[in-house]
Image (cartoon, rainbow over all chains, first blue to last red; front, side, top):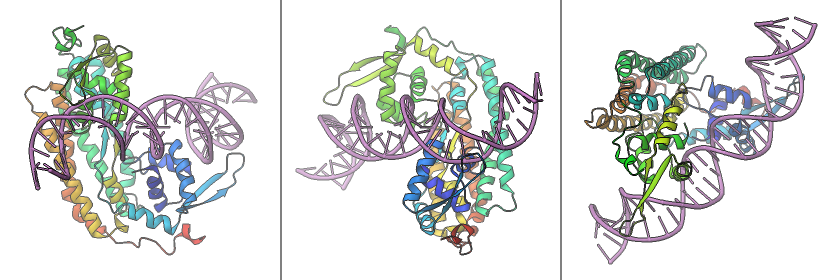
Length: 188
Length: 188
DNA sequence: TATCTATATATCAATTCGATATATATCAAG
DNA sequence: CTTGATATATATCGAATTGATATATAGATA
């Protein structure tokens, strides 16, 4: 899913500036399952405007740079829905925490514990954010459904972490970071 | 987490060629929580070799391009473990399926159903893959723990989908794709 | 015999990130 | 009451990464 499609998706539901699209996709309503940076959003909006899939009107503000408010066109709506016809690609998932967990035997307990605490913080924040959309009165039902899915997964993740935390802690530091009789080191 | 660190992570556990690192990180043992392509792995390995964090030996094969087998050095091990000292960043999650779910009211039932079926297939395949590592005799305990975490999350995701599938299907096509009295269209 | 898949390295245009520059309003702290 | 931090808002740019493609061959399948 490229950034142009992401912009169309958000503009399908509401008018927005580039700034607002970035905010909603990295900290807001859509941040659970999309993300994009300024460096890709602004060029994407320019391209979409050139293709007449969105229109732009400028709102002058006192002092601050004037807001460029983008709206999706009928062509944009058609184009976007068509792009959803293809079966969805697999979810993309990357986790630094699981990278740390994988290496737990070579890491000291305090590092492992800090990683767990950091993760719990992230999960709680995510659940909090999703909660505010999962049952929001004026949200479209599809957005609510997606938020409830997200919440359910985050809560389950938190539960697993509680149930299996001790096990991970007990593994911390159980192996030497640099193994002496490591075949791959023998040649050095 | 950049590709250089990803390569060190894998080489921490086993020697590998660039080809094998790509395979393990997109289809194999590590694919649940990392990913990288040839275009980033080969340059990363060259840089790591220049920095003496890995070494390389060439294995001539009959006909096929010779295998360049990379091993991590003691410096590489130290460097990698230090990079894990920083608290982990939030997981990265992107989902085309949830994008479709969000728009369910504007999509026909058959598209929605195909998306659900496709997703079920992805989840089952992922669970299958993780299962083979979660209880593998010769795997390090940390890798097993991470695989069990992944399996638990995928199973829960599948359960939510089963329990809430009907609800999503009932929302399909409940709104007109292009709303007539849409403020954002009025100006056109 | 022909075609497809897997192994294996490598490059490259296009995309995207992450950081930074610019400009101003607003709010909190000292 | 002034200084500093945070939020709004647009935009650019180098660096990282993707995704596709090229090259070469063995082995499996049709």
